[in-house]
Amino acid sequence: DLAIHIASHNMVEIIGQCDPMYMTRPVFARAQMKLPQPKFRDWLDQEAFSIFVQSEFMATPERAELLAMVGVLDAEDVRTAKDDGVTQTISARKGVVLRERKTIPNPIVLAPYRTFREVDQPRSLFVLRVREGSSTIQLALFPADGDAWSLTAMQSIKTWLAGAVVDKSIPILA
Image 1 (cartoon, one colour):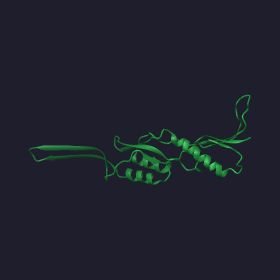
Image 2 (cartoon, rainbow, N blue to C red):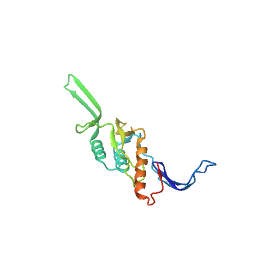
Image 3 (tube, rainbow, N blue to C red):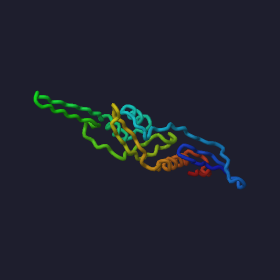
Image 4 (cartoon, one colour):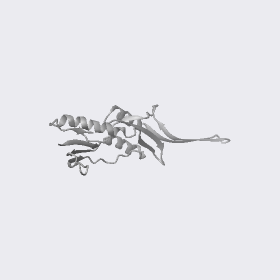
């Protein structure tokens, strides 16, 4: 009378039969993955952002494209002055520029590590924002899928467990 319960994207339990008097189920075993808090919504400089993306997202073509685009950003602060002795002209330009002409894709599909490593990491949408900081360019990723990825992760765990559990009579609840 056991069942495998996928409680969330990072917790799986082996549970027993429901106690009719207290309407509870005993939990015999629990696997819970401790996940680091991702730096979503945090403004990071170019180097920190690049490290964040490389270390906390699966290698995908979209990730490679994002890293290539981030690598060609420059903070521009150009001032020119012309003085011919009679007239003086001063111009200033300041902002974030791409060294090569590219469109910043939004939203972008990425696959961060957010569930057990044994299963495929769910892909989800992120909005990339770029701004000029006090002396550097700052970038941030904002989740844009309404946490739909967690349902996909739970389904991936169920699929993986269906292949890994030897006793096929044990139900898997997701």
